[in-house]
Length: 182
Image (tube, rainbow, N blue to C red; front, side, top):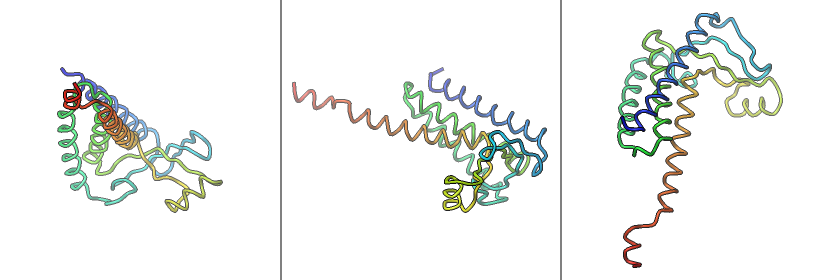
């Protein structure tokens, strides 16, 4: 098996497992909308929440739309993985994170018609609180999960990887120019 496929499969599996195990722990140990575990006082807590929409609860209840979007995204990711060179391991790992996050949330939507969220960042006062109120009109970031973190991290890594790849290609000498110079 080519290296990019192995890396993709490993990162995908770890991401999906971490997402599903964390959600099961939350569903079994925290009463939805009631229990909270303070991780860092006044900054971070775990609480069981359900989201029937997408990011920021957009398009609530549109499970069919999310199902189609996930299927299309997986096809695009598969094509991108197939197009990668075998030495583009960073991008293969990023695609694995994105796919693991998409499938993790997709499993929730399929099984429960909602996504289990549990990570909540908030700021009760101070400059961060003021910034959050100005930008999202709240002192708390919308609750999210491991799949969401993987999706965002994977997208950022892929974007950075493609940017660095473009920069590296610009630094490579043009073979035709070398022939002319000789």
